[in-house]
Length: 198
Image (cartoon, rainbow, N blue to C red; front, top):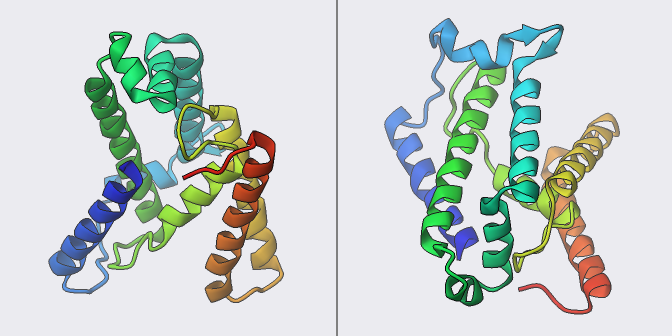
């Protein structure tokens, strides 16, 4: 299960981070380390351009490239995709490598915004991403979902987060609210698709 493996690697890497930094916050990184977060192009942060490029490329691949069609086939039924001649393991490995690379770039950008490296950096962010995907209509069973839906989920969750911040909701309630949003999105998916998601 990809989600369980992701959680396991999160725990392992967080442990390595805490061990390497001894629980301390690191400052004084080279200026180039912050460039992705501080550089702008025509007044727009470079991180926004990178995110837009990532969404556009992924959307194009999913809709028009054979790798995108293979991903939908694997998500729908991996055994059937394998029988159809799709190299399931190879495609999945490639997707995981790309996802890991994008996550690393995102981590570098966040570090640039914060201006330091802390042991609890990005804590619980995986659940925020999970909530955005569910809100965007991406099936947890695989085989359904679009990059437009994913973008919609990210933007909606960003709006919710800003509203909660403006309303001065305590930060320790935000994760509970995200959990409620996930449950509501799953119930809506259950009603609209006629079956439960694993």
